[in-house]
Length: 150
Image (cartoon, rainbow, N blue to C red; front, side, top):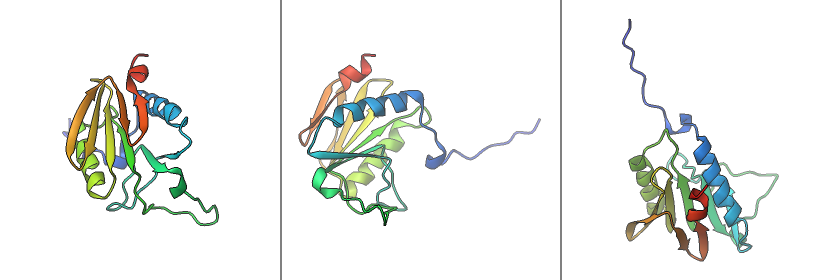
């Protein structure tokens, strides 16, 4: 029998799971109730070679799509980005990604870890943890207790 080692999966090859998709959908459901923000999914930001958070939140006046000319790496940073950990990802990698987003001008990054019902909030001041809680930043609130209670 051959002993073959495969390289670790690249970030782009990691597939989101059912829990990942469900949590993102439930977060979106709550965020869509706010009229003063624009909530975008899977938007590639102009960070490094392109960095794509699960959810980006902008002030509604910052997003003006031009359907004749698309932008592949959006240069404007959201004020809040949200990442949900899938089974194929690890917390350290996503917390490093969160710090990279903060260093690039995003004010707040929420990293959601569903196995322990933990929300990590990363800002320029550091990272704090919330457990199965309602989290609010910059006037945007998500009740994770209702998401995790299913």
